[in-house]
Image 1 (cartoon, rainbow, N blue to C red):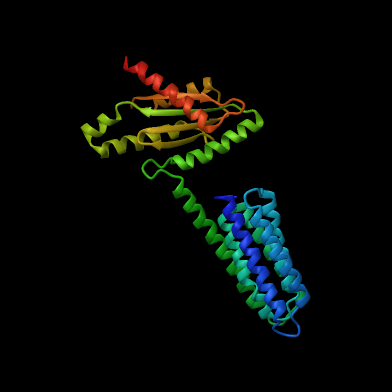
Image 2: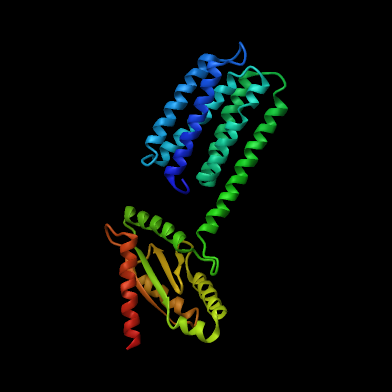
Length: 308
């Protein structure tokens, strides 16, 4: 899941809870003799019970359980469509379908979101066909198009927001938050499969003098061109980020210290600016904070050596 998992699961619990309460209202005060009171009562119990479980376990729930809970929503909405006697009753499920589509578009990766929306539409369409109310085709197609359109719109909006939240506006590389999120993911993968990984901290020498003598616009341009030059030398899996000011960080998955030093030599050749670097290789039990601390210590040893 994207974003804070507990928040996402909490919203899924809210979706279950609201749906359960609406089913309870429908069971207690049926709109017609054809209302499936027993089914609505059962769905009310399932919805409210699942809501309570999801809320209580929102901090422990893993991705697989979240996908299962979303799949269950599709099945339940499809069941309601199957038991709806009128076209209005089937199309009335549209808001619940939109809620599921928007949720998946915000919290899930694009492929997973589209799979869930596809499952939702398959279940509800099968239910609508089985219910066979009259005059359903046009309103149902409108509902389907609305769900797909809003889901895709949410996917794109969420992707743009995540990109903006994790990108440094000056240089276009990852900002501190974005870099640490990506580097933590790379580190967890490296530790799990026993792959080497190196973290490097890069800091410009005499950057203050550039700002003082040539102005801040010159300093900004130096940071932009330097970041662009470095990115041209990096692989797709390498992660460059601006940690703040004139300090940059690199996460190099599948790279030991010797290979990282070769990469640093290529980075130096790509731009005339002077900068210092410190590196740390991940070992068993390594943490991102620990790697950054070790790399930072080596960086300042290099700066002290250069100053002598």
